[in-house]
Amino acid sequence: MKKIFNNIEAMQSHMHPLEINGLKGRMLRIPASKKSKVNREILMLYGHHASLERVYGIAEDMSQYGNVTIPDYPGFGGMDSFYDIGMKPTIDNFADYLATFVKMRYRGKKVTIIGMSLGFVFATRMLQRYPELVKKVDLTISIVGFTRHDDFTLSKGRQRAYKALARIFRYRLPAAFFYNVLLHPTVLRSFYGKTHNAKNKFKHLSDEERKQMMEFEVVLWRENDVRTYMETSLIMLTLDNCQKQVKLPVHHASVESDQYFDNAIVEQHMRVIFTDFTNHVAVLPNHAPTIVASKEESAPFVPKSLRKVLNEKHKEEK
Picture 1 (tube, rainbow, N blue to C red):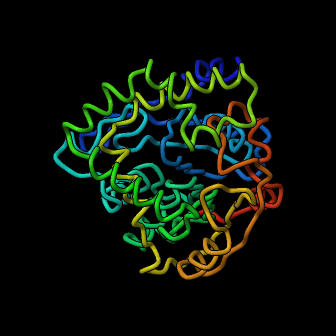
Picture 2 (picture 1 turned 90 degrees about the vertical axis):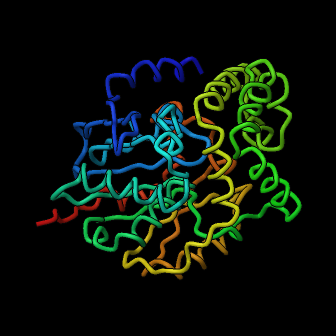
């Protein structure tokens, strides 16, 4: 597990500054490996409670199919939040932010979008709000993504509790208390591992792996903006992206033992939005690992059938 931290140091050579509409953050850019046969332009979008460091391993793995770019979102990974420029972290504002990024980075190019969990939610809304970008997309991929709040298998009681907490801590003073007290490193190390979500994340790990994963969780909780985290939690729990169609097919990587989503309902909703749906089953113990520490560890995360699709040639935009 020491490799996790070595990778974080190694990824610095692929890190670049990012500034959009006055918001400053980071962008990970990994050039296509020498083994790449298709040389795609791949835009990867990470999920909730995430950062560039968390998904570096899978990004490195995806570079065998082309150039991989991952931007931070406002309020994630230490990037300035929407609040810093007098805006709120709504789903439409995230979609507009991504649309600006796509227009800026992929002028005259086709792009493959890989959206992970919440990242797929943002990508879907972007394509719904900016249908002119659809023609730029050669492949749309969901990695344990979703489209509606009722895709979740969480009990109604748990959902009500999460919503209530998010509505309280999305405000400035409660968020400050949450960050300075509840997210204090000592408190996190003592209590986070006992929470429902952490038990699912850590249950397959050895004691040494659990300790190192806990240290990474401390960093992750401390660097992401609390108010943005709470608002995006509400986005997920009240989401309905099924109001407008996207004229693209979608390839979806699901996990049979996903602790968050009902895969049958996820498929039904995606078929409402997209012109076609293809499911690829990933062999994972749960929704997603805390960290994809190396490209070797990402192998089961992207099913072989989906890798075959990524290896197919595509036409460049004229």
